[in-house]
Amino acid sequence: MEIVATYVPSVRGDPAEELRFPPAAATMVELRADLLGASADLDRLIGSAGIPAIVTLRSRAEGGEGPDDAAERRRFFERAAALPAAFVDLEAGRDRDLVDAVVPRERVILSAHFRGSVPADLEERVAAMLAAGTRFVKIVPEAQSLADVEAVLRLANALDRGARASRRAVLFASGEAGRPTRLLGPLLGAPLAYAAWAPERCAAPGQYLPEEMAALIGHLAGRPRRLFAVLGKPVAGSLSPRVHAAAYRALGLPNVFVPLEVGAASELDGLLLPAGASWLDALGLPAGGFAVTMPWKGEAARRCTLLAPRAERAGAANTVLPRAGKVLGDCTDMDGITRVLAEEGVDLAGAGALVLGAGGAARAAAVALLLAGAEVIIAARDGERAVAAARGLGVTAVEIAASERAAVVVNATPAGADGESSSWLEALRLPAGGVLVDLPYGPGPTFLEQLAARRGWRYVAGREVLLFQAVSQFAAMTGAAPPVRAMAAALGLGEGEA
Image 1 (cartoon, rainbow, N blue to C red):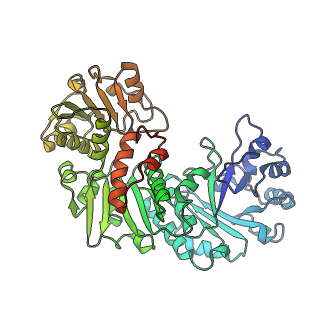
Image 2 (cartoon, helix red, strand yellow; image 1 turned 180 degrees about the horizontal axis):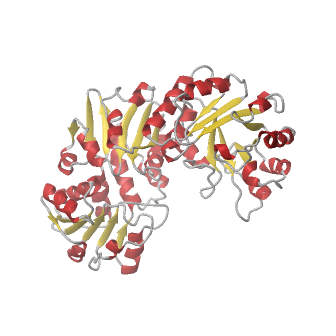
Image 3 (cartoon, rainbow, N blue to C red; image 1 turned 180 degrees about the vertical axis):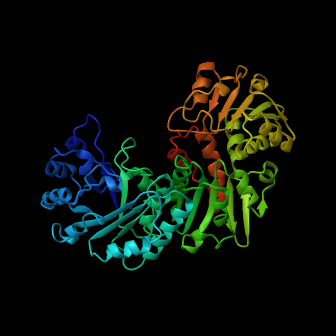
């Protein structure tokens, strides 16, 4: 598998200088001429890269900034054909007559990008493009739903035949919902995997960085033995794939862990089924288990045929295991919460604990604290939901100001994950020495992390909770002893936190 890093120029950087230092995991670079400007010296840039280059002029019709006009495109590619690039990307919808006439077919990547959805006749379109005989064809529909992901993977699975060295089809879906196809496509035989140049310079939504792709699927040479996934919406920012992949690498397990964006509860029905019955199984990607995140923990629990008592009490499952004739569910979030509080030296027996939220994550947090002997109360922005959740758990619903009587507060809402201020969370009033556990996490400090620093509270980050719940989850999913240090390192946590 070649990892192609699509170069997107920075505002002030010198492209030639930047191209001298491609991402370490990248083996090829794509030069988007439509983004580089008419004055770009492509010959010089190709020479600067140091790795094989692809020259692309993405049209406006297919999401780029290049021309749609056939004559203008022909003039560009007549010049590009003389460049020392390994490949030239020609669009099937505009440039197909340039194959051999301008660019030799063995140097052509014939591409097609479809905006809005997956075409109903995708298979026929791919077959027609393959018939052109170019070195590669690249087909990228936009995924809006899990059904789109399934359609793309079904075709990728059908194309997974013959010697991999001779494969020509590169098929994946763009968009955040399309992320799993970017990981599974290469495992199903796609010869090229497209990635972003840098975090702030993605050429298309849903792109991974080259090093992320290497970390998530680099330990695999082909199809995985088992597929695991995190289900939620949004799910692109989940670190579960990273932490589980680190464990697979450490133990030499040929598994893969992908994000699956679930937009409706009904989409769970085709996934949370006994072993061998899901659409993933039908594609030769045996489903070994699912991590479930917001907002589907309650719906996941309802689809399990056998729930662990603590998950049944919470009415929430974050770990679903398809097994022969049954679907098992548990809630390892509870292990994460109690473990981090134990690490903080908190004795929960008789301690006052406030849970923020009324969804599945909040109910799981409340049950974890109750089982540890804490006196639990619940607060939520929606007072009616808080009362309903509290009634179901046998606890009391309160206003957030009641936090002044709590030794522990667990935030089980997405509020503040982006670091933005929240007037509701501002009302927190923990006593001196109180501990704030924040379940959400983001690329930067959450609002509650900033608030805790200002007010002198002890703060436990969501990544630490994620680590310890993932340790329990990994053991349940695989039956193997979790490599805790490798999993902690994948989350950027040092040995002290692990």
